[in-house]
Image 1 (spheres, helix red, strand yellow):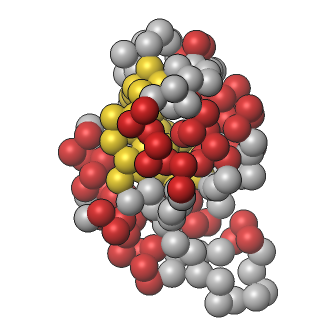
Image 2 (image 1 turned 30 degrees about the vertical axis):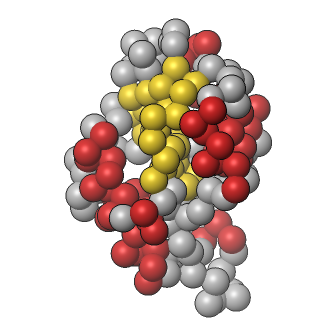
Length: 165
């Protein structure tokens, strides 16, 4: 049963107006939370594949995660920056069959909507409805293989926010 980890980037810094949205770094809280989420990922089990937005705050989030969890080198995909849910599903369906656990790291609202869409019929997933805060991690399993990923096919195993730690 494949598993998907959905990691939103940690809290970013809005202090420098000269930076584009793409180039914003993490702020102090984000630099604190990313390694903490790395511990959560280590407890779950490191992903076999990471697909990530190349935005600076996502890159820095994954660097923080790697402080406490041995992860594979992320595959940075520009199309994950600002991607809609349908685009995220299309990208995830391309994961090689038999890959046990993958992680996608990026941005809201796409990741929030992805998690909600995949777990739409799972009563335990109501926790996702209110908010998908920075550095939050959803751990979802689903039947079949990656090419069958789609709406209501997943089951939420765990949802962790930094404030839960």
